[in-house]
Structures are given as C-alpha cells and as structure tokens.
Amino acid sequence: MIKKINQYYFSFNELNFNEDKLSEAFRDFSTQNFSLLQETWYQLHSFIRQNCKPVAGYRHFESDVVSYQKNILIVDNAQFNLGPIIYRDLKDVSDIFLFVCTIGKKLEDKVQELVSSGDTLSAFILDKIASELVELTADLLEDKIQSELNPIGYNLTHRYSPGYCGWPVSEQQKLFQLLPDNFCGIHLTESSLMTPIKSVSGIYGAAYNLIRKDYHCDICDDEFCYRRKTDRGIII
Image (cartoon, rainbow, N blue to C red; front, side):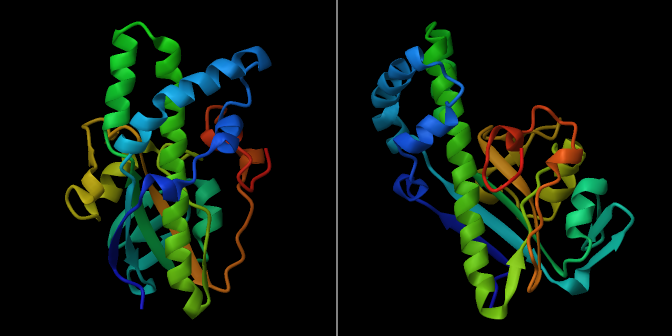
C-alpha cells in the first residue's frame, strides 16, 4: 500500500556521485582546466561527504481528489496552472505525487564562504556539484516511489518543477500548502523560492501501465532549463 505521506533520509554514498558524474557535470570545462577541477574536487570531497544531507519526501493524492481542466490540474481543490507542456503529459494520469527534496544548507553556506574569501572558482565548482547532488536526491526519491508502485502496475511520468516548462514559479506556494509544514526542512520565501536553495520541488503523475513520454524540449523555449544541459533520458 502506498503511503499518503512519506519521507526518506539518504546517505551521501547512496547518491553515487563519482568522478564519472563529475566529468559529466563539467563536460563544458576545457581540457586544460580539468586537472584543476579534479584537484578542487579532492580538496572539497571530505567536506561535501560530511555536510551533504539528502532528504526527500512526497504526498500522494489518489484519483478521487484529482481532476483536470484545460492546462489546469486540480489537486484537493488547489488549481495548478501547468501550461500546455506539462498538462499534455499529466492530463491522463489518475494519481498525483507532490514532492520536495534537499541536501541541506551547509554546502551553500560554504559556497558563500568561498566567494567571500575570493576563491570564486572553488565556489563555482562547489555550487555546481551541490546542484547535481540535489538532482541525484530527486532521482533516488523517484526510484523509491516507483518501487512502491511496481506491485500495483503503476508507472510514473517524468517529474516537473515550478519555474520550468511554462509552469510559473509562484505556483510553489500552492504546492507547499498541500505539504506538511517545514516538510524535509524546506520552506518558501515570499518570492516563492526555496530555502535551503539546493532543493527541488515538483510533481509526478502516475497511472496503471503508463508509458512515460519524452520531455517536450523541442517545443520549450527556456534556454536556461537544467534539462537542456543534461542527457538524462531526454532529447536535447
């Protein structure tokens, strides 16, 4: 039976962030700078291992509180203005999972410390690594949810987050109103940004025997979307 609300605490080792993932994250680095990247990674590795605190959770909504209008998803009377791109992927699902995840605040505090000391390169590298680590945390959560759905033959859609694919970031306020207070240690600012900064929130759809569709990056004009800079199972 799928829990209505669930929360997981992961270890740094479970994220499996290794030199291969480091290379992938910084593949735009020039060859001559890669040794500097590795050196910085070795210097920061112990700190990252000790201070990266991955935590993730979800709230599950079944079909009796889920409905749709054109480009709008209604969950427990909250209306999410998804826009056409996300709506196209979710409009046929029966269940909805709202989720959040974070790696905590200590890595972003270290980034600010490095900036203040003038070591902007190390700050940039650590900030990028921290962003990768929170996405890996979201991947682990996805695996957990899917493993819970497998016995009943349900599959997940891709995850979607406010601020991407035409879904306004201000909609995070609605999303967080449907989650427990301070869920996973995350809260929102008045401008709808999350703290800790290295956090991800979003939505999954789920349905019986669902076949996951491709991301619609070919019709999205957000050039800064992190999905355009990765190849995690999508066309870019």
